[in-house]
Amino acid sequence: MNSRLTLNRRSFLATAAASALPRLGGATPARKPNVVVILADDMGFSDPGCYGGEIDTPNIDRLAAQGLRFTRMYSTARCGPSRNCLLSGYYAQQTALDVMTPGNMPRWANFLPEYLKPLGYRSYHSGKWHIRAKPLTGAAFDHSYTMLDELRFFTQKYHELDEQALPKPKPEEHYYSTTAIADYGVRFLKEHGRDHATDPFFLYLAFHSPHFPLQAPAADIARYHDRFSEGWDTVRERRLGRMHRLGLVNCSLARLEPEIFPSWNLPEPELAKRLGAGEVGRAVPWSTLTKEQQAFQRIKISIHAAMITHMDTQIGKVVDQLKAMNAFEDTVIMVLSDNGASAEIMIRGDGHDPSAPPGSALTHLCIGPGWATAANTPFRLHKSYVHEGGIASPLVLHWPNGIQDRGELRHDQCHFVDILPTMLDMAGGHPGGDRPADAPPLAGKSLLPTIRQDNTVSRDFLYFNHNNNRALHAGDWKIVAKGADGPWELYDMRTDRCERNDLASTDAARTEKLAALWRQQDELYVKQRESAVPATKPLMPVIKA
Image (cartoon, rainbow, N blue to C red; front, side):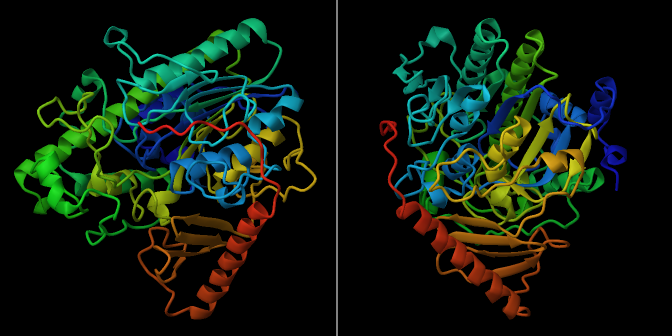
């Protein structure tokens, strides 16, 4: 099905028609393109408008209308390892570059700016970090606004500019981290245009939104007052219908899983005590909730949506700067999410004041498993799990001078480890990278062929392991398990990407063959990391907010 003909959302069609540009020949431009990687934090696969959601994301939608949407991009299910993969081109277990993956960092593990600098690039970072090495002296960025406090959107306590501590924002400054991240990104771009206009650049824009705590400007929250009034079951059904018409998925809805209660969440007896009688700790049918619970849950999803819309507005600000410096046509823009929406319900930072306006600085709410399941429509489970709901990420790729098939879909199976080799390929470097002699091959592949033509990137497998949640994609098949002791499940991804029909018991031979491959790779990656000479990169201080 041609996705150009199936786009049903009126606003998306209008954007596509208004911004249509002449088709190009598909050859990579001779000039090295700039690259902007925009990473959302805990945004669900179906949250953006162009992926079937009802959240207002006009800037992301516009990039999708002029570019490509990938239907099978995968993260690692958690923020730190996903950033590791994106910046290194390796699975997190191979390098332990992020703060969540244990082990020594190998000396052979380089960061993206270290590959790009010999190709003439300057590199800039603004936002969340979650990497063990320092951004400038350890990872070779030229500038970095590093947001280290992930527990406060309005009252950032720990942030740095070029590895120097910044003061806590004053109330009169009206600080909001999503805005600040974009503002520093724009600042770096302006400096680049002024002082380094002839050099290509890489901007890594790592938003914290919509990660908990749910905090957003009141005006953004107000626009969603009635948007989700019918509840998560209806939202899921409507999103699935739009996704089918857009050609994004071909499966049915995964079932709600009320039996799942993450061990890291607040104990159920404490939910009502600390957050109020409206809190719900499990993904149960909407019709079973009390009116008080339904009202409270509607408020929470309104804040989640507001955070994404505010982020989208800031993305528009960065796009405007690219246009102002005449760099837009030569810039590759990628929009992703570090993992699926989160079912976490916890209280950190400054705690939660039930009397404060929801979404303000004194509150600490989380969307919880019901709305996380809706955000990850139509897939199973959430962040931290390696079922599809935890690892499926949107990928919008926009490149005016390099994309011919604008507004279309790409169905190649791809992973965050592919971002680095893709960028090197675009920049005219070797997609395998200029690696130290003792480094293993990169885990990722260049996606440049599929930018030109769908289904042109082949691979043997994709590997997943986070907190002993395990999975392996190999061709049309996927095995997946919850926890170290959970049994392997087997799914045919051609027809059952929503993981409804477990075939492990009826195809035990295939299941064991794939499990043996997973064990082989898991052991290999740990050996590669632990047998290497440890890195001596300057490390970030440990922040206890």
